[in-house]
Length: 99
Image (cartoon, rainbow, N blue to C red):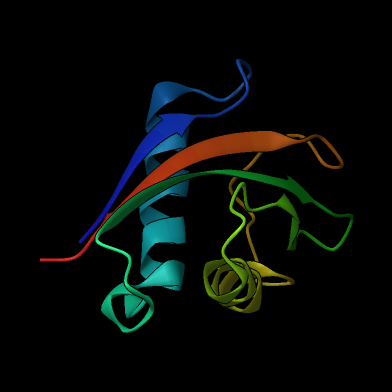
């Protein structure tokens, strides 16, 4: 189960924040955390949009190597054209839970 709270920069309109959250959720899908003994964890994802309108993960906010690698592989250099500012760091809290 994946849950996120849009905490994007103040220049992002609420409907845009919801669109970003939704798009990132679809990109991430649900990692198999049970294999690593994780029942619940929250990360604070920090990313920016480069000049090619691609996501570049700045920080995943986790010390877990599997989750860090999983998030970066799912998001880095994927297209994100709905954010207004390039080269600005955006923050998104994400809660992962096994069901």
